Image (cartoon, rainbow, N blue to C red; front, side, top):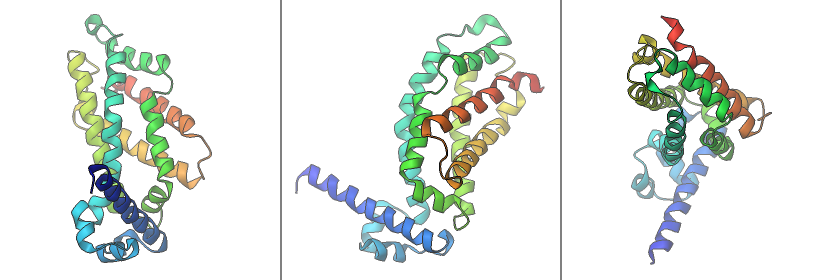
Length: 223
């Protein structure tokens, strides 16, 4: 078997497993589903399931993580472009200027649009996991994962701005702000799906991005 044929087989098997999970969640709660049921619905062996995933929790988080990891390179390019416009020697205004410029220079950064396009592509999965039949475990871990990622990126900005007053804010350093930004994103996803996606991925990405920038640029005034 060629390498490309092997990759295709892997992707096909993973898709069968993911589709099976979605179908089962739509029938009953995520917490009640077993790996055996997922494998049976996907028509693969339990061995095949465990070849790619540790358990059902690993399955849903890997789907999300794969997308975020892919988009992180685009986020890194965007952050570098924004940081290049700010003089870290300008003092306490640097932090506010950073987010003001970020909001005005590029109203809808492509990585945010790509993220909501991913949610739209896997709408059935996210609707199932975040809906009434979903899992409190998934919501909690999704928020924690996003908060950690957001916190790491904000600390990179802190270092880039040489610890000016906005960057050294306690509510930023202790994780409060990253946690709230993450919760805002999860709530935005949930609302968007529950309402039948009344906005395009670009529109909902723009609204979330603007809310996030509005919060972050005011952080220096909180203490």
